[in-house]
Image 1 (cartoon, rainbow, N blue to C red):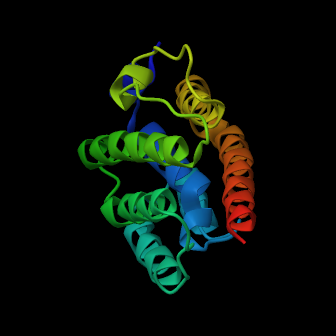
Image 2: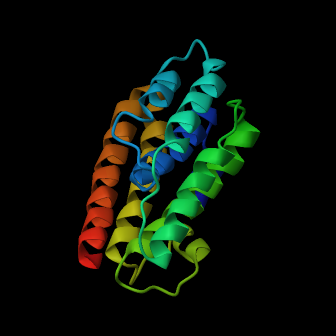
Image 3: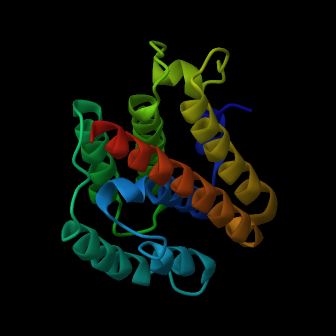
Length: 189
């Protein structure tokens, strides 16, 4: 099943997790650390109270708003703008309709970020990639696409029980992106 299909069929928890995981993998671009989004992950695990999501989201925005952006080349700046856009577009309410739009936008933005930061060029449209045409896709972006699919499949198959695996996948991706950003910064010195 393609990424587009998985997003279309996901429930509200799957959509929130998908969007949050994309943002989490890109949080190094916003100066965040491994714990920055932890309260939002915790809120997804708590099935009794989705109302705290908006309050926690505002705290995260405030924390990342004061974090320094990652300076660099034009592609890096665009990547930071895309990551900030994911954070700002996050809905304050965890309704399926709002989360579907956000999860889809985060998917596109995260893939675009990974394409911008991948040294291998790829001129294929992102929508083609999200629909399943992955042949010849640059490695950084291909890995991001696999992570997005894995998160949605795990949530679809295990519900709330899949959150731990989704977080593990996201953590792995965040570390990869942090290493890429660090390597690019060293290359400019």
